[in-house]
Length: 342
Image (cartoon, rainbow, N blue to C red; front, top):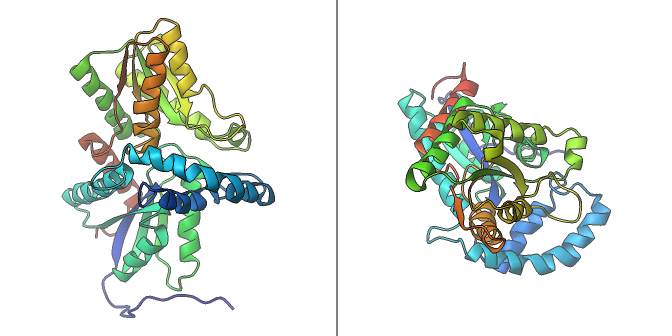
């Protein structure tokens, strides 16, 4: 028999609240092998992330990956860890605080919380906190501009699993993505222009998105279409010619073919072809994290310079940029339409 959890209070006459829940991918609790093992076990056990038969993948995960990769990843995380903790956690917390302020300035006195799909604060824990605050209307806003089953869909999976055990469900809405939202494109363009004003223009602008296996496109994921759509709109907003920018995909894992072109080989090819300076932005990441600060700002730079390039500039994620917070607020207000503004 199914057991349904209930809130600790039953005052059904109490005023109800509206909340926005930001969801990020996740981060380990510390830059240690033990913390990475816990994080990677949860992350890589998700069938949306690794779409292999469980009987094939789980022995590999527990017998090989979780024995080797935690120590390697811990060293990488240690290279970017801050006094406040994981950069992704720090930026996401700040984004939630700033979004609450931006919505409040527009007349929406809402609860704004954030959760991590993997790691802490977890989606179940944050949802239960919102229930205790009498939230009856919930907008889930995954911080993935481009939709993919391995990111946006699995965030909704986690929300749905938690709510499946509730008796009194909140009204629920979810933002699918915002890859072509004008405010988001404006924020990206402003980020690039700040780099131009500070350091001048490089010969080539590289837009690096997180990669996914190519078979996800063949199975129906729109991610491969939405990333180029973002890239084209950003290039148009910046007035770039086709030969002045390049779109690539990073963070390949395993032996299967992923979306191409791959970022690091592309950086090496640009340098080998005579391009002396590149600037790189990661439009699909809205907060700096391991994949941007270590894989791009450190490893990508090294690859370009070793291949003969002379100047590599990583432009940074949107993080707490005012234009990005404005864009998030605009996306939220659009999906909150018709709900009480508190």
